[in-house]
Length: 245
Image (cartoon, rainbow, N blue to C red):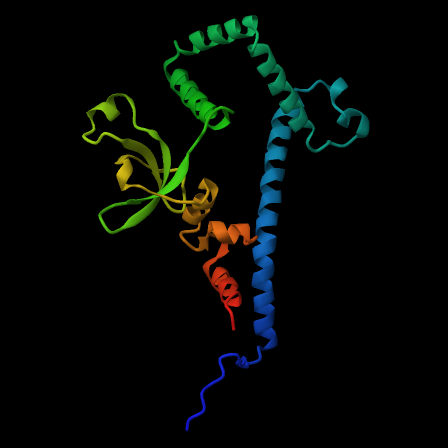
């Protein structure tokens, strides 16, 4: 009678060489070091750029580098924040609103400048407006044909002339992003019944799109258990360890 294999018995893995262990340790460290290093580099580049543009405009009497002998990193960023806050405070008043209205009226008379200014203003108001609800939910839609699904972001209910002329009664405006750049994509008007709303957050859906499916967000149950957004292979290993022997 053949002996049945013991499912709880551990299979001995072949011992890795020194080079293989070094390669594994290097790749593991790279996953940790690369995001931190790139984040520091981007932040430092932005600070350096703002300092280079703002600090030369500050009078020498108010510039700490005059007394210290060296440039102070981030001084231009502080001045930029203070100046922007002062401008925002002034434009809330009656006089500030009138000055802003007069300046925009002058800009509207300049053909090329008008297009650039209005475009940048609309983008800034959309991104920075505190009352902006942004995307509501992440959803699945069948695109570009039936049977093929894509991740999209639910924007708002379709209103206005577009909503009135569509044959369906309940339509939703959705943004279908591209991979790996989610800032470009297509605006689609989809019947609500054709949407499959996802439980994942919009940020998690964006990570899924940017990574081209390599990073899978955890389910609500896994997130409640403390599982962070990891790769499919890692989630598969975590799930296997929770199975009863």
